[in-house]
Every structure is written in structure tokens, then in C-alpha cells.
Amino acid sequence: MWHFREAAYEDTIAESKLNEFFSGEPSEAIVRESFQNSLDAIDNHSAPVRIVLTLGSAAAAGFPEAYETLGEHWQAARHESGAPTSTRYLLIEDFNTKGLLGPIDKEEKPHDSLYSFWWEEGRSKKRTGSGGSHGVGKSTLSGASNSNAFLALTRRSDGDELLIGYSILPPHELGPKEYLGYARFGKRVDRPSDGAKVIYPYTRAEDGEVIGRFRKHAAPKRTDENGLSVFIPDVRDEINEDSLLQAVVENFFFPIIKQSLVVEICNAATGQSVVIEKSNILSLVEGGEYSEEFRSTIEVSLEATRLASKNEFFFLRSDFGLSSENTLSAEAFSDANVKKMQEAFENGDVVSARIEIPLTLSDGKTVSGYADLFARGGEKGGSKTYKAFRGNILIEKEKCRAAQPFSVLILDIFNDDEGNELSEYMKYAEDPGHTEWKNSAQRRSQGRYPGSETWQRHLVQKLGSAFIAILTGTDDQEQIDGFADDIFFVEKEVGPDEPGVPGGNHGQRPGTTAPVPPDIPAPSPQLFRIQRLANGRAAIAGTEHLKEAIEKSGPVRGRVWAANIIFGKSKSNWRKHHHASDFDFAEDGVVESKGASITVRSPNSLDFIAESEEFEIGFNGFDPNRDVHIDVRKVAEATQ
Image (tube, rainbow, N blue to C red):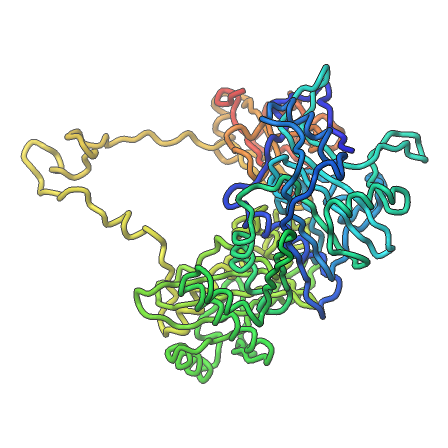
């Protein structure tokens, strides 16, 4: 049954994490999140991960535990209807994966994928060596359902099966109680060790009748294979066979072509299915509503895998090493190889190069990471397609800003049996949806890399434009979208100086005849600076302007706020995103100060008086896997 989380006395319902659901196209969101999780849990690299997507319908009466209690709470949350009498569902199953591992009691260690998948909220579930970092996870799976819920059946290596579930409803009241909206599907038991009432998964060993009825209701294809089956009841209407097929092809064509992934989409009512694999992906694209540019991308991807299988790459010169001062250029390759690369590119062939990038770990050890580049030339003014992959994940918003022409360019930061340190490094630079690289590669790296290791990320993001510059025999130039338009666009003709108007028409505000004021006040000097350190630490110290302020007016009063930034939430009220379980400034050891007196106002806010320009406030205990926003201001400038 469902167990909803009650609002405690110190909780405010309006401040709970309401509707952390995905935005954008639903099929794409559910495919990206569920496939990334499955590819992370691969059990045998010599065989591809197989994922089966099944759309069907079933009577809710066949498994009432999943619908009745949930329906009551939905009605209490002002939903238009209660529990459905029948359900259109989506079943997502992976094979050649490990399933959800770890203890069934959340208090037991070590925490593993079961704990991360079922219990953690807003925190990373990806450990060192995994493909993703901190994905949107349960909010995406539950958001794919009109009832905002999903169930999951996992078979583990010990042969047992576990049945769990998760739901995120709006905060609501039901009877005399208030609920934050979170619910977990499981059984309430008295823990043998201490008698505490806790939620455990249903297990085949103890709850065979419950799991048997769920299997009959969901009709999973899994029998005795390890892995995870996610059942999404009352699935959204936008999620259908055509939208799923398009989402799979457009987001995971490269791992499919690399034979790391095979996908099957089934219709439970008709028994018909379509398999998406390397042998037929080009024909599926040619027979579907895809652009000519995407078809060309598939062709280049097929050629790229052929070149990679034969190790047909151009490599950097043995005496050339990339560094913070030495980026990718024609000098990185021998003159003979540069000539061959340019000739092949001009002839329309796919040119491939493997780039070795050094990385220094926190213990001082230097290791190597690798990225593959595949490029085919194009005409000036033609379309440009750039696809960046890390492991099997498409980083869809990354751009190549090469000014020179090309038709298709693929960046592959691959993972293999031996791993790839560059993939491990770049995963910490991804946003929660794995759509772009934008954060420092150290923020969530848990101290794996020293603070100086930031240049590699910038290098990776410029590899595409640098490679195209080499192939076209030109300088590395990046085209910034709209840059020239913004600078050179003139709304009206600028006339010569006119008598009586200083400067003529120059410097006038649009639509007025008044000149721009010559003296614009300088912004207020910044008195404080924020440093984000490794292992969940941060510090606030003074700038050179603080000394002047103290000498002029005495000690300076300030205020600090901090909160975890939650993916999918509005940033306009970020201070209220803090949850009691995140951190508490009042706890011993969380805040340390020098040259300042401190008063804690709330678990994530404090006041201080900076008595010396050498003051410093240190913070410990932030989650190293999450983004923490910190704000510090003078009290006179702060708002509640």
C-alpha cells in the first residue's frame, strides 16, 4: 500500500517540493531518464543492454493496492477524479542489468542503488564509474503518470524480487492530517532490531501473493533475468508508440549504432512490436519523418563505429601534450597527417581523431582521458549538425560554434570495459538533466580532482570548433550566435553632429532626443566574496573594499542564506527550497568563523558582524553531490 509523508509541526506545506516534474516533451523525458539509469546498471559490457517499452491497459481492480489509497489522496489534493477503474500503462524493462542492489532497510549500510532509487530525494544516485551524475529521476518517472506515481519490480542477483513505488502529489489535507505529498509503496513493519515502524519493499520470499498479483496486472516480460521493470499507471496521453520511437532514435541512436543498446517497443493489445537496433536504424529513419540532416547524422555514426572498430584514428604527435596553455591545433598532429585529414574532409569522407587529455587526481596521480571526434565536410552556408555524447548520454544542448562549414560532427567521450577518466570528469559538469556542460568540474566531484583541473572542461567544449579549424586549414574561430547582429544592427541612420545638440545624434536614447547622461553612478563595491570548496565545504571572506568600509564606519553587519537548488524548480524563491534534512547552521561543526560574531537565524540563514577585514566564515556539511546557492549581503541591503 501507499504510505504518505505527513507534514511535521516545523514543516510548511507551501514550502514542500511541489511537482518536481519534467518539462518539455514527455516521451523524450521518460526515455532519457529511464535509459540512462538502465545503461548505468549494465551487468556485462560484452552484451548490449536491452530495453523493452510496452504500452497496454489493465483493470485497476486487478491490483487495488496501487490505486485506492492514491485516489483518495488525489481527491484531497483537488484532483478532478479519484482512483481510475482502468489504467493505460507504460512498462519499461531492462535486461543485462544488475537490478536495484543494497539493503532493504534504509538505515543499513552500504547504501546502493535501491536506496538511491527509492529513498533519496534530490540527491545524486550515481557513484564513481557510473554514467550519469544527478538526474531528475523519480520526478520524471512519476510525472509521466496522470496520477503522478509509478511502481517498480526488480529482480536481484540473489534471485529475490522486490516491489516498491513512489508518488509525488501536491501538498494536501486529508481528514485532520496534512501531507507533504510524498508517498512510497511498500509494507509497514516493525523492525526487529529496535521495534521502529519502517517501510520495507514487498519481497517474493515473504509476499509472494502480492507480487504474483502485480505480475498478473502489469504482465512484465521479465522471468528469471536480473534487472528493473518500471510500471507507470495512468500514463499521459502524449506518450504513445510513435513518440517513444522518435525519442529513442533521436536521443540514443549512437549507443544503438555502437551496439551498446537494443530497444523494443511493444503494443500489448495487438502483440505487435518494433525493434530498434544497428541493422535497421537507418531504414527506420529513412521511412520516418526525419530531416535529411538527421539521416546524414545516422550515416556518419555508422561510419564512425566502423572506423572505431578498426582503430582508424588520427592521433596526436607523441611529443605533443595538451595542457592549460596548449590547446588543440594543427601543430598537435604531424604535417603528413594534417594533409591527409584535410584531403579526406574536402572529399566528403568521415575524418576520425582520438584525443588524449591528461587529468590530475587529488592524490597527485596523472591519468589520461580520451575523446573521439568524427567529422564530415559540408558546403558554406549549409546546415551544421553537432552531437556530443558522454558515455551513452546525448548532451543535447551542447553546441559547436565553428565558423567554418561542416555537415556532421560527433564528439564521443566513450565508456568501455576499462572506463574513461574523461567521462568521469565531465559528468560533474552536467546539469541534472544531462543536457549541457556548464558547471565547474569540481563542484560535485567529492574531491576527486584538485581545484586547478578546470581547463579540461573548456578544452572539451572547444574540441569541435578546433577540429573543424584544422580540417579546413583555418584559424580556430567560434561563431557566437547573434553576436554580429547585436553589434552592427543600427535602428536608424546616424547623422552628423548638429548645431545645438552636443554630439549630434550620437548617444541618444532610442525614441528620445535627450542625450544619455554622461555620469552613470558606479555600482556599490562588493564587500564579500564566496568560495566553493571540495567535499561540501564553502567559505565567505572579505574583499579589499571591506577594509575601507570598516575603517570608515566600523564593523559591518551582514547576512547569509544558503539552499540547495532543485532541478525543475523556479529560482525566484530559492531560499525557501531548503529542507530540514539538507543542513542546519545551528549544528556543531557546520559553521566556523574568524574575525566575526555570528547569530544563527534559521537552519539556512545567519547574521554576522565582520569586525576585521581578515574575517572568514567557513561552512561544512553541504551535500557534495548537489548545487548549493549561497548569498551574502550587508544587512541594509538584505530582504526577508
